[in-house]
Length: 231
Image (cartoon, rainbow, N blue to C red):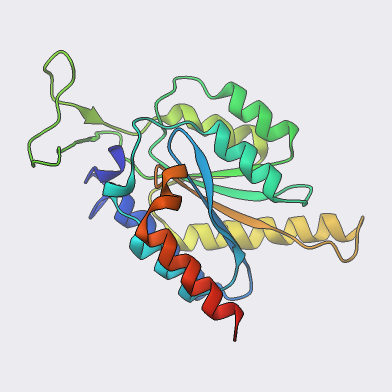
């Protein structure tokens, strides 16, 4: 439930949704894919420049759809690598840092598999309390009030893979990074394969997992995709 925290206004999850919505409407030349994960990972959207479809997806995501506790980044990295035929896919992790103290294994996997991982930190150093579904403050097993704050251990993912660490939901910075990295990737790839397409991936940490496929939202997304394919 850490994405419910209000240290990033209005909440971490809503800030992520707003940033992504604004991005896909302003960046019309690139295609975006979305992977959601907690302890599992699933493709929420294949690569598309359909801003209407992506906006519908982002609007439908909320905290009530998160069925598992905790988060694991490795499944999302593995899935993003499988999704792309590009030599160096560009990823953004929208995250509060997750639960681990050491992400060396994930960083090594990303580096060995050519992933450029940018980390967009959606949490503050001071942190925030969390509320249960009944509105009361969440407490740990020892009775202490739970405080969730940013976990900078995840920065190693960007450091080791040539990515960028961004503190906060900074749309302009994200746009700058996309422009710079896509340009570098294009120059690099055109030296080897003139017509190989570039791929761009956005990973929204802690949004959904495999049970998403059973929700009404996913059913509606499938209907929308079918309607648009008939145009």
